[in-house]
Length: 432
Image (cartoon, rainbow, N blue to C red; front, side, top):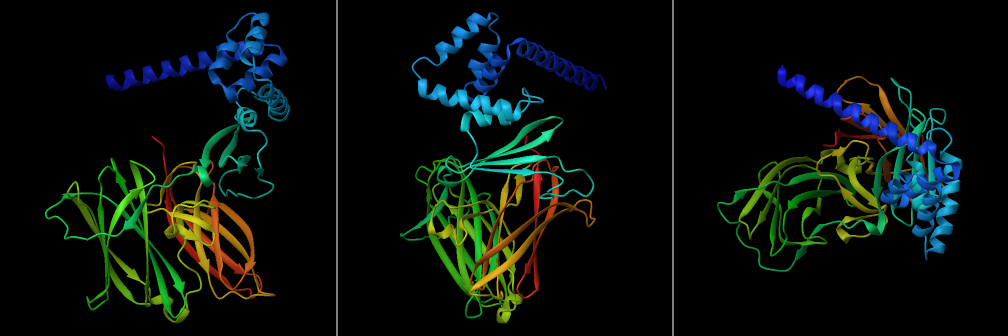
């Protein structure tokens, strides 16, 4: 009890201290003239250290001299800064300029190429048990950045910033020619993650996509050996694939891999082994795979696959889909607030003039409450050529609480009136 009391006292002290610092900070800000407030808010977007130094200068004359020195020899950059800070203050500085994170983002990057405003009236997102907080999504296509803002009280706070496109380098495993060898026995235990996606293929075949991730602390001299064996219900070996892999695009981190196999619709047992030959460590995993519902092309919607990324960038042909580069999640757990993606394919669609027309609804349910209450929903229209739809969707969890959720995709064919449904589960984790 004494230890708990001490902890509470320390926490209370830290809260009081932070409030005192914030009050002093605000007091200094509101002693500035209006044009100086704009300067300070703008500097926070491009140089936070300079902003603090500017704020703590007591004399207006000295602040002016500091500002001139800051921009010495940078006339073009200054003109851009001056314009952006004025626009940012005018648009976002009316109510809580010190707390609104849109101001520094605007000053640093300028107007977004796409700005989505999410409000309860527009019902882009819907909460059943709680009011939807107004939110905004800013996309900077050239920079490959997306900012998520949610309004708390009178200010918009930045919850997440994510990257896409060419600036995102994906570490991956690449197959290369060489002599495979028996796995070293015994080897030290190791961890890797595996998940699968099931998709329809022509000629009554199912495309089984196998996604893998593994953490490598140092790729120097690393050679991995990956073995995939597929057995039927009679325990007969149907597919055997053994390859050597090298790590690409990074010297350490989480590396992604994907293997596609074409199988007849049936029940299978899949065994996957991954071995680090240099460090004599490895692991194996067994999964049961049911493809029976794809018999005679009866399945009209694929699995719904949660993804780390879907964009127009390129990593390797193995990650390429009609929607672009697709990096699947092997463990459907993502940090709270951070956007992620979903992919699905829909088959046998009606067409008119060679085009199909869909309405897609992504409903999110709280799994832990075990009640059919939608906590969020996305609705999108889809119009493309052909009788197969390739659906890639980006989901912004915004201020959704940590926990376990179910995503349900409902696809309505607007030409035939038929509906198809797919679902998957995911977890939002608290960031440590």
